[in-house]
Amino acid sequence: MIKRAAATQTVPNDLEPFWIPFTANRAFKKAPRLIARAKDMHYYTPEGRALLDAAAGLWCTNAGHNREPIVAAIQAQAAELDYAPAFQFSHPKAFELAARVAALAPGDLDHVFFCNSGSEAVDTALKIALAYHNVRGQAARTRLIGRERGYHGVGFGGISVGGIVNNRKHFGALLAGVDHLPSTYNREQQAFTKGEPEWGAHLADELERIVALHDASTVAAVIVEPMAGSTGVLPAPKGYLPRLRAICDKHGILLIFDEVITGFGRLGHAFAAERYGVIPDMICFAKGITSGSVPMGGVIARKGIYDAFMTGPEHVVELFHGYTYSAHPLACAAGLATLDLYREENLFARAKQIEPKWSDAAMSLKGLPNVLDIRTVGLTAGIDLASRPDAAGRRGYDAMVRAFHEDGIMIRAVGDTLAVSPPLIVSQAQIDEIFQKLANIIRAVA
Image (tube, rainbow, N blue to C red; front, side, top):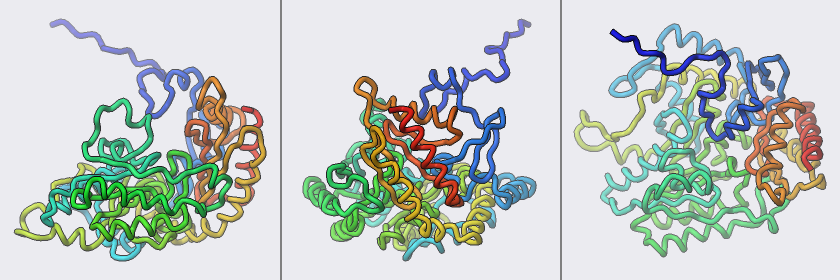
């Protein structure tokens, strides 16, 4: 018998095998940005150097890092129940967490379908929308409408309704029957706005044009982010979301809010829907539900949507959809502990309270070299830098790299836009530190 040689030799600390997502792999592996541990507002490199987290990880660690109650809940759950089947069986914490999430949502958003990420949440909501119309005898409603510059994860449904070019262009024709609203951003009309821009509500009326083109009887759902985060922090204009709601109601179209970023306090409320006084038909959530500690996502649906499926024989599956790890016990334990922290420390209200100081600090960068625009809403800020003539995106990339290696701060770069969104526990001194460091970085990459 010939013994087959190992296909690869394991090398300690070899960076090559890991294909890193949404990352320039070759550049990263020449000068890696590695993180070894985290606590509260800071990450730490393997060498022990502290990094102030101005990005809440990936918009997700809203309660801060490695909070003791969340860690303890995960450890206890792992020792008690590691996994329960997600189909035909469940466990008590799944129902407890669903009830807690539904209680936070506005209106009759009463039913929670769990999954494992924002991408899965979006694809789940789109499938529910299509199936909802089908079970109600309106199977012709198959068209989905997203928005230019929207980000709805990386599933085929999400990139189809999404509107970021690089996320779409390499992956073929995507879903058929998808259209897009225009982006709500106009620098000439909205530059250096704190909160929701005054200009832009009328852009919701483009939905009427799309409906007229395709006929309302073919349109299933519209999906938008209340604040488009991954494209560089684009707040909804004043009046825009209520107008979308009214048009959807007029034509029997479902309205889906993608709150994967805006949910759980980022805009000063449990959900941005509350901030804007609009009740969508579904809310997609993820990220902040566990403060990033365990993967989890979900969709909150209005009672009427859930009830539409609850017909026919009781032993028959009503919705043929789900994931092996839906409502995973560890994720549910983390989610319950995270919601407890949000409540006990009043973090949603705290974010609303410190939003004016945050936005004032962000606007202090106005007038620095190459700063074209600054946008803030809740505890988020997007800073647009002028692109270098020969290399679009390089100035933003250089700023992110310098921030990590030299300035001890973690930020996100979206092309030449710097995005900052700290954990909701950020202190006033740390807000000052974030923007002082950003000022130094912006000058350094001028």
